[in-house]
Image 1 (cartoon, each protein chain N blue to C red):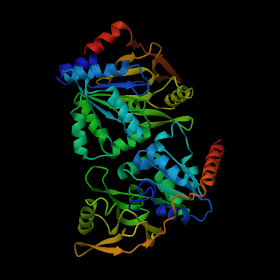
Image 2 (spheres, chains in turn purple, red; image 1 turned 90 degrees about the vertical axis):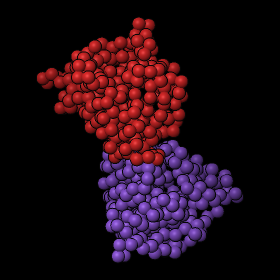
Image 3 (cartoon, rainbow over the protein chains, first blue to last red; image 1 turned 90 degrees about the horizontal axis):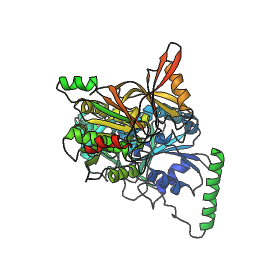
Image 4 (cartoon, rainbow over the protein chains, first blue to last red; image 1 turned 30 degrees about the vertical axis):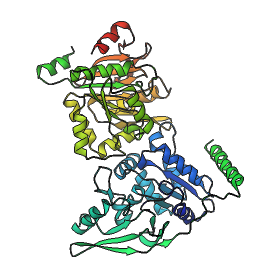
Amino acid sequence: MGGGGFTMEPGNPALDDYVRTLAPAREPRICLLPTAGGDSEDQIRRFHAAFGDQLCEPTHVSLFRLGSRPVPLREHLLGQDVIYVGGGSMVNLLALWRAHGVDEILREAWQGGIVLAGLSAGSMCWFEYGVTRSVGRPALTGGLGFLPGSNSVHYDGEPERRPFYLDAVARGAAPAGWGVDDGAGLLFRGTRLAEVVASRPHARAYRVHAVAGAAVEEAIEPRLLMARPHADPLAPLAVEELRALHVAQRGFRRG
Amino acid sequence: MTRASEQAAVEGGRPRQIVAFGGGGFSMEAGNPLLDEYVLGLAALRAGRRRPRVCFLPTASGDADHYVVRFYRHFPASRCEPSHVSLFRRDCGTDDVRAHLLAQDLVYVGGGSVICLMGVLRAHRLDVALREAWEAGVVLCGLSAGSLCWFEEAMTGYHGASRPVEGIGLIAGSNAVHYDKEPHRRPAYQLAIGGGMPAGYAVEDGAALHFESGSLARVVSSRPSARAYRVEAVGDEVVELPLPVEYLGAPRDVAPALAA
């Protein structure tokens, strides 16, 4: 996702619904990795608020709090249907994953068919290169490289990224890749782009590659996702009940 | 004056100072400012003025907002020139962060996860910048993860067991913190030392090791009962040697720190 989902589009769950329904499970286990945001409590709270009343089993893993709240990382992550990576600093994200061996676990998860999703730093991390603002001005930084090529997010939302990215691709500093607007998402099956979707009418994705030393942008028209009514006013009690049930189940499993 | 600081004085350099808290300071001991006053005193001496420059690094907590807020509450502008560096919300380049750290009198590293702290510091090359600051005489301090990071090796508690983590290595040997807090820390540290981890220091909450130019100059505490130990392997045995601790709350001890 170039930007979007519960942290950036609180009133529009279209991209999050799309991610959730990519997993074949009826009630998918979905785990948030809020690492790039420093495991911010706000991001974690919003995730549980957004997914807590949906048909899924949401959890999160905080690498900063493993000392006080230990989680068997490999076992927990490989037991998921969806791993959802939050936004923040891409440089810190990769450094923290490597320090904890999460990079290798995620490769196993991906190869094992677990849906990997994310926005912003949580999108660029899957590619060979991303355009980070972790060090102030836009800069190229390496990702996990599961997907070939490069990725620049917030293509419309943070205008200083686009000229930097185009220049990097033109110079050959970054391999060809995708520039993605806020509200647009790329679905890769394996390493092939399968679909481009969007939660808003004007969001676009662009294939960016170099032709004779110049960067060329080819706009890709996304499929506009239908927005689910955000809250069902007729069933507030059912929602509350389901949320309580989820909380009880999670508490029970953690034992 | 210790031998190390004498040597530094002879060489015309400033003493390289690190104060490593086993636990304590504003984030752990609400209402007990003794350790914070101690490092603020050292910073004021270094600065040669009443309001030293103090920079907080909340990295080990993931730059938690509430932690940053509490720092400014306890290090107000009336006492110092406070600032903080957030590595999760950076708006300037590495050279600027390095220059900022070098311009401080005191860099205060907060607690949290030492594995996360070291990973992020290295990614931004701040391990190098902190070494430079130390060499330039900037006082470095911190608690918990912010203590462990200065040593060659740190003990950390994960999944009920502890494991060694490599620190910046400004202080030779190893370090264990919160030594009194959880019962598994003591046997785990002794086992690690017995298994070849370099000898080091185990420090309880409220105690702090003050190093000058890499050597332990004194141990101070904010609580009368807080202890610190030198832990080393002697033959096949691991020996825990209690260190003399100066309680900062005793009237004679408070004076020099506050007078600074």
